[in-house]
Amino acid sequence: MITSFPKLLAATAITLKLLSASLFFGLFLGLFFAILRLNKNKFINKFAYGYSYVFRGTPLLVQIFIIYFGLGQIEYLRTTFLWVILKEPYWCAIIAFTLNTGAYTSEILRSAFQTIKPGIVEAGKSLGISNKIIFYKIQIPIAIRQSLPAYGNEIILMMKGTSLASTVTLMDLTGVAKYIISTTFKPIEVFIVAGGIYLFMTFIIHNVIKYLEKKYSFQ
Amino acid sequence: MNIFKKTILTVLASLLVIGNVYADKIRIGTEGAYPPWNSKDASGNLIGFEVELAQELCAIMKHECTIVEQDWDGMIPALLMRKFDAIMAGMSITAERQKTITFSQGYATEPATLAVMKGSSLEGMDTPAAINLDRSSSDVKKALKTITASLSGKTVCTQTGTIHQNFLESGDVGSVNVRTYKTQDEVNLDLSSGRCDVALAAKASFIDYAEASGKAVVTVGPNLSGGAFGGGVGVGIRQGGDDAIGKRDAKLLKDFNKAIDKARKKGIISKLAIKWFKDDVSM
Image (cartoon, rainbow over all chains, first blue to last red; front, side, top):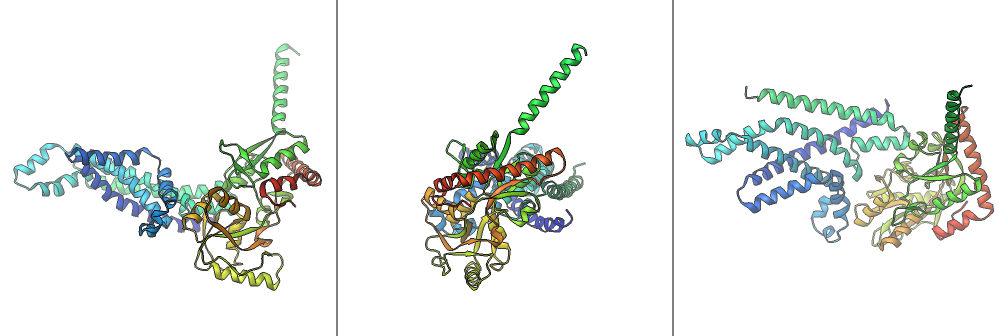
């Protein structure tokens, strides 16, 4: 238990890397699709809805398997430049996680945009502020504040989701825990330590979000 | 003794009998994903060399057996947690595993080998046909040097928690960039996709995969045995103890050893080996 702790802690770095990269790309992807969802054009709207429907409606494990093992079986793909990225399990995991968290984030942001009272936008318009500035300076900040609690939840879900990276050979926290078990045959002890590290990360994320909520509260 | 007490005693007695019957049924754990040792047919039934051998051994022991499926990476923990009583899953007898569990005598052995896709630079590796790592002759040393040079800078894939992983991490072939997978099926997939430059597993699993998938997988280098590859495949059983269950485990080990002796004498193991491996890998 004591000897496995430093190894698990080192593996936590990979878990955090996967988490931060997929959250970073996922936030932009989510914002992009949330804006598409608000578009009046029926086709664009349906496309954005379809994306979030597919990625929220299928298990993350299936998504990561399709991207890693599935795409790897398409011979044509292996001759294109895309293979440089898809060859690496690290990037396959980030692509899967980004697409998944992007879908959830787009829903969170969409509902946040829709809860903004029309009066606020109208007030901006009556002051002669351009639509663009209203969107960037008023709607987006309010939407982000509104979505903080739900988004905090999504970060925690994603953090736990990164454990699936171990299924595509990555040596993240779960991957290293499994590796240690394969030589020590002590699953209970090792998984308890790994679980403790996950719990600690949840504790940090939870408190950061709580702090941000307080800081940017409307009261 | 009144009727009430009698009824309770009868119920308790019958429970004990039922409990005993269940305890007498030997549960054998296997992976079901390592052909031809053990695998599953199209409808999900467990098949393979060890599945049939288990049935033969149980018939010799005159015991009822059930075969339980278990993922490879949880095989030994599941045995220790008494989810089943014996492992027959292509598990080689190694010193590392013997720290935790015990093994019957070996019933089969099969060399490990490297495999690549056709056209790889590793094809035509200049080594003897087979090397035994227990013998430290100049031949073996030379072959290990050749393998070390061939593997350097390559991504070498293998199943996690296997003798093959142990070998790659033993230092015999220098420091290797190892990538580990949960099942051999996944190793095969990534070998054919090109993510793995080279893979290491039991020879039969590559030949089996090449046949079943039609992919151009070819084995290279020598047949490897001894050293990190252990002393053949045996039945994994919990280490015996002084309590009732410990004694039962010790008896199970004896029974399996006797049954393997008998099966060997009757030629059953050889017959099954030839059926599944197309080669007599029995020992």
